Image 1 (spheres, rainbow, N blue to C red):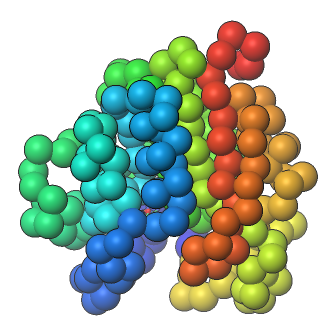
Image 2 (cartoon, rainbow, N blue to C red):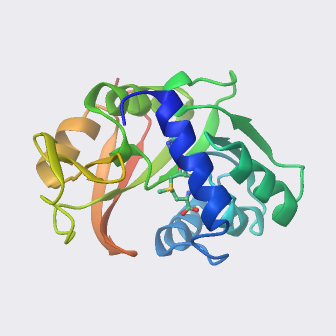
Length: 210
Ligand SMILES: C[S@@+](CC[C@H](N)C(=O)[O-])C[C@H]1O[C@@H](n2cnc3c(N)ncnc32)[C@H](O)[C@@H]1O
C-alpha cells in the first residue's frame, strides 16, 4: 500500500464488506484511557482513525466531547447511524492534519500509527502534539513485536512488514517507542492485550518538550 488513495480504498472496502467488524464494545485501551482522562478532568478530545465510533462512545458517555478523523466515508456514516450526527468527524487522512485549529486537552489514537511509514508516523506525532493544549495528554496504542504476526509477510524496512492484502505494519518495542515519542512528552509505556499484544503509550504536553 503506497499512497492515500490505496489506503482509502482498502479501509472503504473493508467497512463495506465487514461492517461493524470490531463489534460495539470499546477496546481495553479505550476503557483504561477513559478512566485516565476522567481522572484528569479532560473535556474535549480528538480521536484520529475513529472508525465507526466504538471507542468514542465510552468517552462521550463520560461527558467528554469527541472529534474524530477517519479515512473511510462508510465508517463515518456507520458512526452517525449508531451514535448520532452531533459528533464532528473529519473525512480524510491523518497525513493531512490539522483539520481544524482547535487545541484538544486529550488525544486517543488506537491502532492507527503502526499502519503508517516512518515519515507519516513522525508527522502524526508532531501534529497531535501541536494540537494538544498545554498540560494536555495524548495516548497511542500500537502493535508490539511480541505479536505472532511480527516478521511475517513481505519485509519492507526494519520492523515493518506487508502483513496481508497490502496492509503495512510497523511493530514497536520500547526502544522504537522511545525514539519516536521521546521528544513528544513520553512519560509511560505499558503492555496491554487487545486482539494482539499492544503497547499503551502516554505523553504529556508541557514546557519541557518540543
Ligand atoms: C485498525 S483500525 C483502528 C481501530 C478502530 N478505531 C476501532 O474502533 O477499533 C484503523 C482505523 O483508522 C482508519 N484509518 C486508516 N488509515 C487512516 C489514515 N491515514 N487517516 C485516517 N484514518 C485512517 C481506518 O479506516 C480504521 O477506521
